Length: 95
Image (cartoon, rainbow, N blue to C red; front, side, top):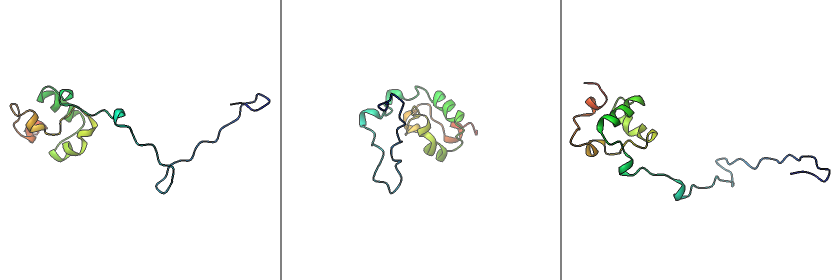
């Protein structure tokens, strides 16, 4: 934007939303949020195991807390890979 002389005019930044601010950030629209579908999950337990270990997970509670870092990790790991599943210790390479 320019003034009547053609010089650039700085615009003030808008208000920053705070906890008590009436200017709240816009909510995400549902079409903007990409949710993992069953077909998006890792196809094999070995792929999921590699991804979890790469993220530094070492326990079932770590998995539940940090699974969201990789949307391809399924929520019900033992159910998803029931035919290959042995234990959490084996999954994290602790056995």
